[in-house]
Amino acid sequence: MSHRKIVILGGISFIVGALAFVAVFGYLAAKFSYPDILDGAAAEVLPRLREGGAAMRAVWAVYAFLPLLLLPGAVGALHAFPASRPRMTLALVALCVGVLAMCLGLMRWPSIHWALAEGYAQGDASTQAGIAAVFHGLNLYLGNYIGEFLGEAMLAAFFFLAGLSLLAERRFPRWLGWTGTGFSVLFLIGALRNVTDAVQGIASLNNSLLPLWMIVLGVALLRYPDHS
Image 1: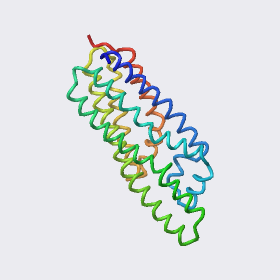
Image 2: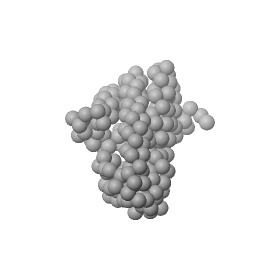
Image 3: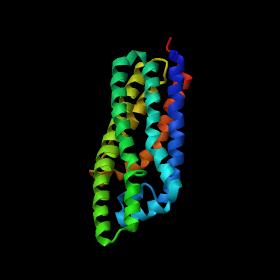
């Protein structure tokens, strides 16, 4: 595949990933009270997950694999910023770690949590208490620590390094680089929402800013694909 095609594919991947994120996020917000329900107890969350049926499980499965679209986007950015190849190589590594973490965090919903929901519906009080403890532990480990904190911190690192790389490329408008670095700082602050409630507003704002910045970055790669 030629250099130009790799950059264009990267831009398309960012845009498609952003639009898919908005669609899935909107469905879960309407049908599952997402993301507020993430703080709910097993007695509230698991029955609602099971009631969603196959459609709910399928949407969670799609959501779990959506972060993978960031990988071809990052490869396209690597090729689009030749003046910052070492920096973008580090950014690509950070993104790979982040994507793996986010996928692991999200995959618990259509897999382990789905099985827990089935067991919870059929179990007695003692069984439900045990399932609730497992549910809470998985949310802390796979959700809060791995998916949300590690995944989002690594994604913020990628956007920060990509923003610096945009500033180093003369063919890109400088506002793109400054916007990217500024957004990365906000995104990193939002990743701390499990540490302090003081940043919850920023975390909620990031749910809108993330797809917006992915689209902007994707369009930039499509509009300025050639560095010759």
